[in-house]
Length: 277
Image 1 (cartoon, rainbow, N blue to C red):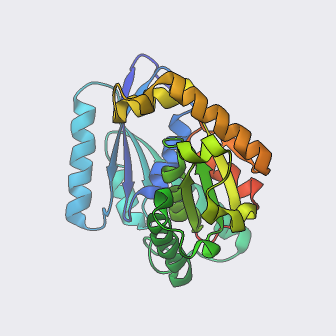
Image 2: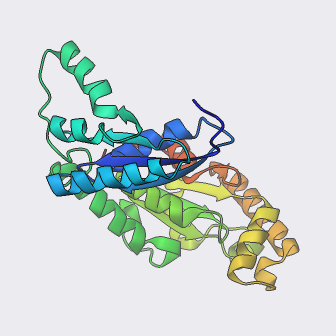
């Protein structure tokens, strides 16, 4: 790879949503330090007009002289792939790289159906995802304790420790019904779990965070408040960790972990079964 170009444009081109190309491509790009990747997603490239427009956009970037753009595609249509690969770019065709070897191994031709990996075709899986997202939204931040028995996991922790984004990620990515409930100062002062959670102790999973990072996050929300003071954050984090330890609740420090890492760890430790792909 020509390392003289510190900024490279990467196009994710798909005749579907582009999510698969983004996920695979991003995983590859993170392995390269020192290069700034300008990432552009071009979804639903499924007509001759859109294909031509896509090629024009890629060639325009190439003509700017900042290094060949990189094009990563998940195009099902072979003619569309052929036309896109004529652009002045370095191309990686994910479907061509993986489908042909799979066809040879399985002895079956692929259906070449557009959009199967991220669509509502799988009604059961799609239904799980929508149900889980609705559940997570309805049970965010302890808004209600109704139907907590239906939760597969209940995240607990101090305010701004990462409970909401983790709950939504578990729902959207894995189809898991995740509720989240805050440990407020009153809970920490009396060192007891919120009363609505007591019957569901076996479903609880805690998130914690370093006081310093918590103070930074809270200052973005309520600058200069007691809520965001470092001393208060130290107290809340220490009390929350002590409470979770006393109650036998597994917990994870979210400070240096991505939402993806947090959610995957929870899936493994709570032994949850993924319901959607």
